[in-house]
Image (cartoon, rainbow, N blue to C red; front, side):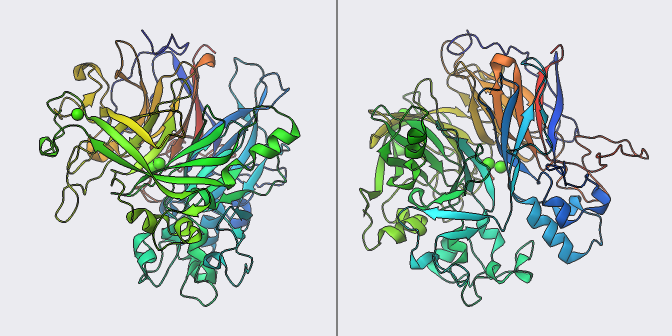
Length: 602
Ligand code: FEO
Ligand code: CA
Ligand code: CA
Ligand code: CA
């Protein structure tokens, strides 16, 4: 039995792939091809990609680097022939992007232009054929470091967010560290600003600088040499870093729209945000703060969703993430704390499980944190949460509700510091010390999604069962699963199976990262089947599962990132042979790309 009914996408799991293999491995009967690659020209005036002669001006008109969150939304009225693809560009790997000795200032400018977001139209001949991107299409758009984002919600205009360049505290240039995300029921895209601290030099002395990892060291990319706002020690820019670390909302169907940052959803290292409409009509977003020992959050909209598609309905829905209540999670186990010795072995009651509460930070427009205003809670959300006693988690990455069951899946990727001297040890919800492999929490809200209490259990404790006796798959026989480690992004297929992409397996279990299907119900609950493996040094992002069309899309991020330009680890996806002349638009260097995996007979 396959999930909640049979998916049309049937495959035989691939064997785990050695981490040194520079190949995209797909199941028998499937093939793959890129949809779009780093450097592909987006507009009619975009230069063709030439890796040996790249420029910032060219990069600003081309697909960016290190695609992470990806979604593909059909364009109404196109008879399944056109769609719009969104992806973000989390960071850059200058060490493998550009030849050694490339001009330093131009290198920094290219790096900046390769960050941000891309919206691009796709087309195909018919429903059974692969997608291609459309150069020069009307919806194509690059969001760069000088694109203006409107900050909305209760903290917009706060003195904590003003700079000399933006005395309004509402108009922010750029988005940084965009990691995972989500797609709303009203057809917009959410993107999480995650490791924004790495782009700022700062005093590094305040409680907030320390809590958000802002330091006085020169940054890795040294953009502070080009623009004073990237050093918050500069007069007038003390608040610049407060303008990052938000959830961004983009309307991919309106190329003239101003993207927004939602202050009501709090500021931390946002992995992403995933939305579900509760029975009451309120919209609930689940959000992880991806840092060791940081927290899980949820946002409940003040307004309610309108399912119609009129202009009035859309206008209403576009306001839903601008105002609402913010909570942080506390988990309590139901087994004796002494049972958790850090090994990850099951407790005597046979389950990692218990109850939980959503602790209020802001409710009804009022701060629920002693000594902090609403603006302070939203700008310094980590400091606010610290005061109310939430549970320190093992790096929450994607947190996604199943639209089939309403259960919420919290992906804890790993936490190699758990149990180290001075750090919190194992508990029922984070049961392993030196947790290299990660685990997944399954939450069942008590009432609808707006409830302030919940039940929980661990769906899986990841690892390679051949080497790790604690690996646990909801009771499914460990000998019959694909080894899986460091879960990161998740998606659901049309029948409710969970798909998990991983980031970090090479350093934990020695296999390449990949994409895995997990059955969630019936006799096969907990069965993990590997669908693909990514090339050397890459992580698997996206993913998008169109199983009715027997097609899967993944964003292959940072292939070959441990190499150098002269000594590349990966040649994905062009695979130009040594000594061969690349065809126009190809490169003998790795290119982060969105790829589609489809039936070889499609
Ligand atoms: Fe960018 Fe939390 O991964
Ligand atoms: Ca228990
Ligand atoms: Ca991630
Ligand atoms: Ca990642």
